[in-house]
Image (cartoon, rainbow over all chains, first blue to last red; front, side, top):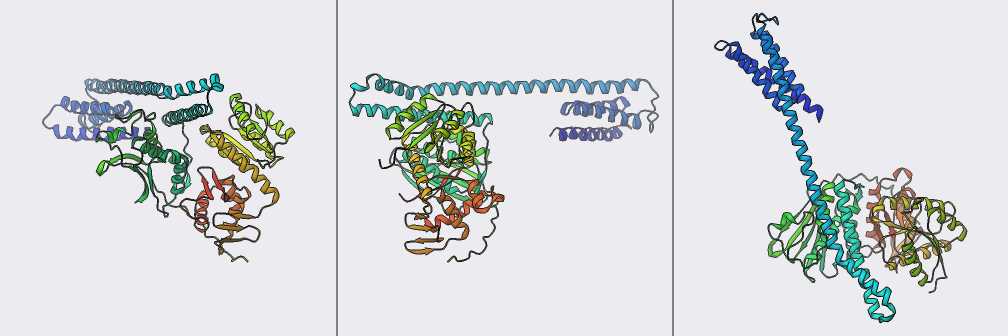
Length: 361
Length: 231
C-alpha cells in the first residue's frame, strides 16, 4: 500500500518533469528562460501538492536537470555559465520542500480531525449504549427484585399459585435480561473486532433448524411457514453466528407483528449467493425506515415497550458483513416486509467416493 | 424415581450457582458433592467416585477442560459442561477432552436435569453393551450390521454404519466433529467437516421420518452431532 503510493509519486515526478520539458521546448522560441523556469516551478508545485516530499524533491531535481541540460546556456551540457541560475535551482528545491511541508501538516491535521470525529462517534455510541442499557434493563430488573423479595420475605404467607406466579415472572424477566445483555455484549464484541469467525462447511438446513429450535417458544405466537429446499449447497460460515443472524430476523418479525400473523422463512440459491429471507405480514415499514431498521439502537416508533435493545438487526448485519454478505430490508406489496441477507457460496469441497459398499451379509 | 440415588460431582466456583444447583438437584433425588475449584474437583472426583460430573468451564484456578482431561485419565463417567456464550471455543475443547454434553449459562434447571438423566442412562447402556439402535420407524442392529425400516431392510454403506455406531456409543450425548471424523474416516480427515454434512444428510434421508426435520440425527451447531433415541 505504502510502497505503491511512493512509486506512484515517483512516476508522477517523472511524468510532470517530462511534460514541463515538452511545454518548455514549445515555448522556447518565443519566451524567456525565466518563463520556462516558471513552467518547471509550476510542475514542482503540482507534484508537491499531490504527493509526498520525496516525490517533490525528485521532481525538483529532474526539472533542474532538464532545465539545465536543455535550456541553460551552454545547452546540451550540465555546465552553468550564469551563477543566477544556481539561485533558480535553489529556489525550485526550496519551493518543493516548503509546499510539501505545508501539505503534510494539512494532511496530518485532517487525520487528527478524522480521529477526533471517530472518537466523538464512539463516545456518542457509548452514551447511547448506556442509556439503552439502563432503560431496557431497569424494567425487567425491577420486576425481578420486586417479585423475588416478595418470595424471600413473605413467601410463607402467599398462596401456592401466587408463589408460582411470582417465581415464574422472576424466571421470565431474568431470562429476558440475560438475552438483552448477551445482545449488548455481542454488539460490543462485533464492534471491537474481537469476534473470531470460525468458518466451517455447514448445511443451511442445520442452521435453519437450530434457529427454529432455539426460538420455538418465541415463534409459537405466529404462523410460521418454512421453505427450505433440500438441495441447497453447503456454505463455509461460522454456523453459530449465522444462526444468530437468522434468529435475530425471526425474533424481529415475532416482536413487531401482531400474534397470529404469518412469518415466512425462505432460503434459496441465487447465482453465486445463498439468500435467507424472513417475511412478515404485520406492521409494515415506512419507506424511511427501510435503511434505518438495521442501525444500532433503532426502534420502531409505534412500539409499546415490546422492543428489545434495538440491536438485533444491527448484529445481523454486522455478522453477515463479516462473512462477506449483505443484509437489507424490503417493502413488499400489501404491507408485508422482507428482511433478507445473502452469503457468498464457495465452490463445494470434493468428497472422495466411498469404496463400492460390499453388500453386507 | 426408578433410578438409584446417583452421586453428582459439581465443580463450580460461584457459590450462588452451587447453592441453586444443590437445592434443585437434591430435590430431584441426587446426592451432591461440591467442589469450589478445579484442583479440588479433580481430587473429589477420585475420592468420591461420583456417577457423573458437572464441570463449569470458567474456573479461576485451573481450566475446566483440564479437570475433564484429568478425570478422563481414569474414568469414563459422564461429564456435563456448564459453559457461557463467551466460552464457545472452550466448549469445543471440552468435547475434545472427553465431555459428553453441555448446557449454556444461563440455563433453566429442567434443561440440566434432562441432560443428567440422559447421561446417566447412557452409562447404564454402555455397561450393558446395548447393540440395538431404535428410532421412530427404523432399527439398526450394530452387531449384525443390518438396518430396517418398517420391517424392510435399508442398505447402509460401511461408512454410514460406522457413523451410526460411533454416535450410538454415545447415545443421547454430543459427539464432537473431530472425534467423529477421527473414528470414522481416520486421523488425517479430522478437518473434513463437509464429509459429515454429506453423510449425515444421507443417513437422515434413509432413516428419518422427515429428513428436513430430523428427530434423531441432530446437529449441535459448531460442535458436533447427537443421536437421540426413540422416546
